[in-house]
Image (tube, rainbow, N blue to C red; front, side, top):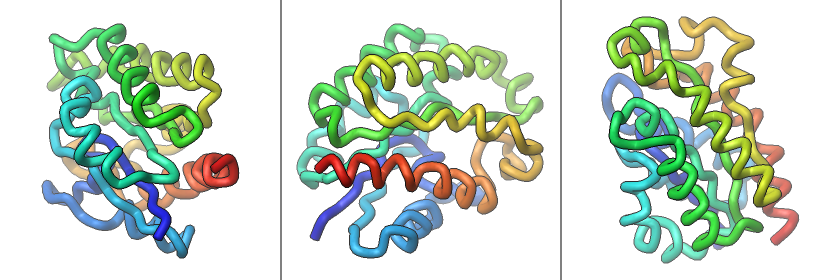
Length: 187
């Protein structure tokens, strides 16, 4: 069976009320039908730390497409610079193969989350890194932040101000599907 790997942090894992859920994976699976969706979202993970699990969680599955969705934890970590983030993304792409990658920028956090962790204010820098890496590698890239800014954060976020609501996952899935299909058609 052909498969698609969703590779990222707790947002990719579909965390609902503090626990990973199959919500995001199921939405992608329901839309694509014939593909196995393998969710490799790691709670608290960052792009540079995820490199340690790239072989076992992604490459060993021999995926047709890998959706790479990091950045929220990266921009909140004082030890991770935008350059570190860029290097980690490029390493992933080099190992996976750009023809199999789809990139997603970080989205949004609530004002309360930004005040609790002021580093979230740097999120736009990490969005720009993803867009730059996507363009340089000619990879379909979803500017998820741009999409999110068209909606109220109350509609898109859970009470913690970081993780996504079911509505946000539906919106994300709808915007992501055309990019996944573009890469599937290349393969």
